[in-house]
Image 1: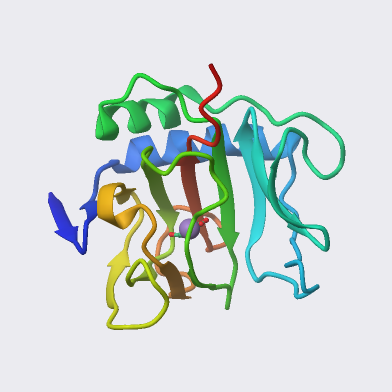
Image 2 (image 1 turned 120 degrees about the vertical axis):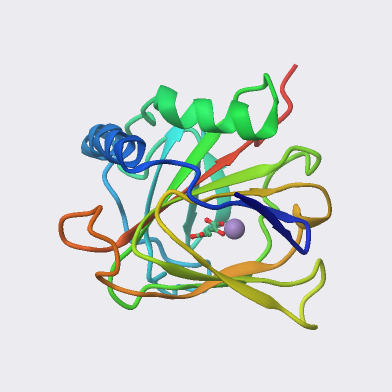
Length: 202
Ligand SMILES: O=C(O)CCC(=O)C(=O)O
Ligand SMILES: [Mn+2]
């Protein structure tokens, strides 16, 4: 089922349980090569999510700033984006272009993500695709400028959101995650993947 909220296309239950399980298996492989790290914002505040990435570039943050980097903070290159994840991207966007980055956010108990825009990419005409796995999360959608009315929906395991067009630069965030609400991940928690085209290299 697809619904559109403020330009965000939300595909509810896009992935069935078997597809979610095999995606988690693939991600375990990615994370064994590129472990989750707890990033700090440029002001030095630790984020509550833990992060890693796959693809040619990963989004990182530290005291130096927010940016895309071609290496994991420990120095290794990022693993390839698993095929089943790429196939979601191609199917929901209809694009041939492969995303440069699959950012992996892991939300443990109490983790959240404040309202923000995704704006470290070079070209905002490409959409960002988000895949949710594990615990239910309250996703808040706002406007292209800070402030104003917002709308929230629960994202469940297997849901896919496409942030394109007017929603591409809209503020969004995760207010809370219902820890233990999904049986997908053995110890609870939520994984969110965001697929991004970072640069339009020719
Ligand atoms: O966890 C989510 O659903 C959203 C993640 C997000 O907005 C981001 O990583 O930029
Ligand atoms: Mn975002």
